Image (tube, rainbow, N blue to C red; front, side):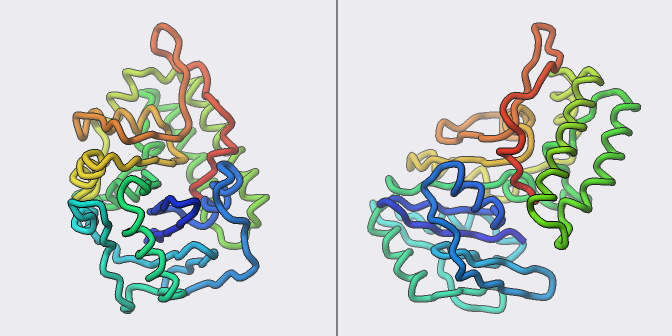
Length: 283
């Protein structure tokens, strides 16, 4: 289950959905609007997960099937905001209830014009299970139409994926392993001759779907001019194609920060843009 985080800073409020604490460290270093990590870190443990509370963030455990449509009911038609009714139950751990109340009050007072949303894509905006099967990620759905290279990428996945979620590997070592995985995978995509047409076909045949209520939430936030930043370790080109094929539209208030591909005039992949190390968000 993905945590939710609230942050109020500089008169603006950001709601983080689906971002693990490693990503919060990355955001702080990348955009310089987050506070420095504090030594006052607390870990909340349930039967299967451990979440870290990083002041002044509040990371909450939420129900696995909490539909995004519920969020639409929390924004009033007027200037003020009304947050989700958050009561302490067995499904939620609140580190500081008084601080949470103050944050909610500040968000209401500031209004929608001071609100922005940052969300992960894979498994957050998209379903984990689709028609009884594990939903695919933006990386996982990609097929080159070349069995040899598809098999090689599967071998890399089988080796590196367990390392990605290993709780015993230090962050520095894990970062190097993830960079190594990305470089090898991206090299295979280029060497195997990935094309734009192959991406479109992969999305068409994919087992990927948006969570219930996501479209309604996007439309509502677009109407209120609330910006959405999709911050993903996947592939922006594929995420955009998923939007085109699954939603049949784009949203003026949505920006995607992710890995991007560069294609030649024939639509063949030639390189990847940017530094992959700046987008190691998933582990």
